[in-house]
Image (tube, rainbow, N blue to C red; front, side, top):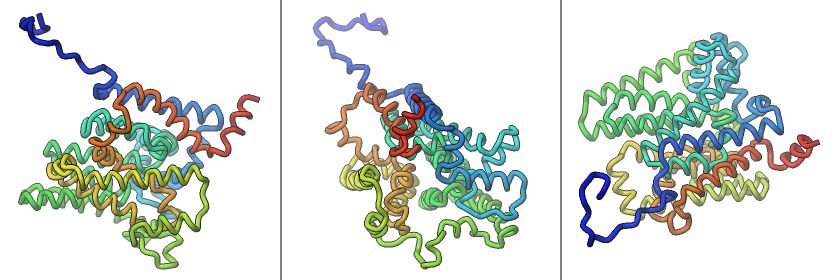
Amino acid sequence: MTISGIARPSSSPSVPSAPAWRSEPTLREVIALWFVTCLVFVTFVAVLRNFFQLVNDSGDSSAYMAVASAIRHWNFQGLTVKHFWGLPYAMAAFSLLTGVSERTALLVICFASSLASLALAQRLWGGWIASLFAISNFDWLQRSFVGGSEPLFVALIFGSFLAIRTDRWPLAALLAALATVTRPLGILLLVGIGVTLLWRRDWRRLAAATTIGLLIGALYVIPLMRYFHDPLATVHSYEGAAASASVPLFGIPFYAIIKGTLIHPAPVTNLILTFGWIFLVLIAVTAMLATSQFRSYARRHVSEIIFAGPYILSLYCYNYSHWARGAFPRFAIPIIPFVFLALGPWLPRWVPRDRRLLWVLAPVMSLLAASSALGVANVFGLIRRALA
């Protein structure tokens, strides 16, 4: 008898079920992977160094905390405008509501956004892609656990994708607009939403999405115009020192990557890591163009592709040689699911689809990411000091 109570003919051959370790990771397992990476990363750093000091010193965290403090007290005197302010606004709001410090607000938002991003990725693309996204990129792990705008940006982008798929276009536009004021390339998704609705001739939803985008944009630029006399102050902050040389933000593909590699020395491990991602994304682009499976996906999810396609192109056209190669893995974070989605038909040839492998890789990748955050050259000295 079967479970349903219907007898199976004795002559029918039994079909062996697939081993459990080959099945799709569930949402619970994806979340568990996140907790493992978080625990390993934070514990390793905290044992070797003051964790909160690393947060202060890591990436753009101090700049975000300074902006969040200025927003919280609504006092911009002496503030140097840096980056987009979506994350600092969220930090200031959380800090005001809970009374915690800007640093605590940064960590809570990054932790929560990172976890939400994985849950959304599992819903959008399944457990395998969500799991690979969770553990494959050192910069993602570092920004998730010591601070950065990427987790919030990714959560908003993925949330907008899900809203589009469930036909909630005003919510999709709101999330995409909030993503745009967090990191500027979020505007590509707003364009994708507008183009899709225009193609469908859904004038009512197009008007609503446009109104929402313009409203968020206006609310964002009014303080900049009032206090810094430049509504595009945060846009101009990305020009940095290169502005004096009139270097455009985007230029000839690969030019800045090659130039930066030649004029900015880097450790061999860093070169291997960054060029690994550069070539992996290129291989994925080839798969996107070559496989009917991905082309079918693109036809079904036009807004996502309008975001992902130009975003990938921008990675190779980014024109500031100091960051074009070295920051490539960080810049690539939002399109990692598309990379694994495109490579899906090819990956089983080289990578076994084995959930046990995920549980081996999760702590290893987290340890390596934490070592990178501390500085690989410093790790052995820190370990000796901790053991002394």
